[in-house]
Amino acid sequence: MGALELALVKEAFATNWIAPLGPHVDGFERELAAYVGVPHAAALSSGTAALHLALRLVGLQRGDEVLCSTFTFSASANPIAYEGATPVFIDSENTSWNMDPGLLAEELDSCAALGRLPRAVIVVDLYGQSADYAPILDACAKYAVPVIQDSAEALGATYRGAAVGQQGHFAVFSFNGNKIITTSGGGMLVAKDAALIERARFLATQARDPAPHYQHSAIGFNYRMSNVLAGIGRGQLSVLPQRIAARRTNFQSYRAALGDVPGISFMPIRPDSEPNYWLTCIMIDPEKFGASREDVRLALEAHHIESRPLWKPLHLQPVFASSRVRGGALSEGLFERGLCLPSGSSLSPDDLNRICALILETPRSLAAPDL
Image (cartoon, helix red, strand yellow):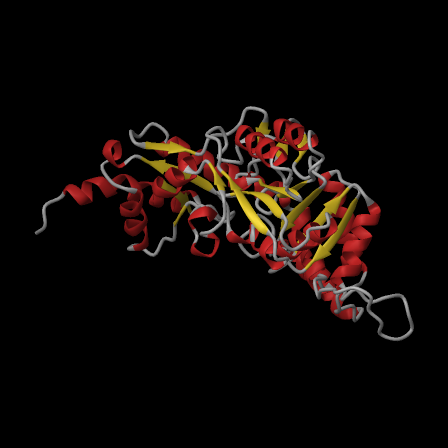
């Protein structure tokens, strides 16, 4: 948080605009849409709420199927279940760890042959890096299946020179406390179609009909962002380039210290994309490095440094155990050997050096005899 965020929050208090409407909400929607290069946006209470509304807007019905990345957080698929629909999971490819376009095309062809096309495809832009949208969009256009971008982690990233969020029918962003910019909690739904975003706002404010009394002809949700949090978001958006630069420095520092170490490799970056470097992620080969992913995680934890395994694929999650998956081995291997390193925008060079030293020390500490 900085001085601008505080000033905008004070303005919300001074003008008594506290509720889920007001000039900061309008301004945040306008400024975020301009940044992404998509004309319309709705500020919401979370990225999950934005995904849920996107699925409503594509007409998701109970019993439908939605194809979804498996290598992601459960919030990418939970809204499918909210509507009584079924997720079908698609494995990753090894050039960016995002959804494999070839496997997606195979699944769509199979669905078409069975006469049961999915209602939508949810593509996750993982760890701040864009998926490969050109073949994904081609595969979906073949069957007129809409694409929803779960870009919660990727605000500020680009794909083939265009901002992430421009590629699909809808895109979703998150401003949760761990994202590259935050409103403490919040999200945004963006789209090119003004009528769809207006419908999203309607559904997000309890679907209240235009009447002097409270009248409802549809089921709605309490999903709008407050004017206070939108003020924070406007201030945070103004420093997004600095946040991306700080995260890039983290990545470069880790790669300089660990990039040539046998058994350690980094999340690959597609040559046609520029990530926002939200998290720096590594893979650890225990035979070559001399320690496993879990050995390193516990060694860092012993010094009060948090790191985390990469996402456990959704097709391995108990709550989605009955769901179909195409592929799966690649994301399972990423989960088994991958680690997210500390990546906050405020990390100092000393912090980064200390983390790298502890990682490099882990094999030696494991090999040392007990005294």
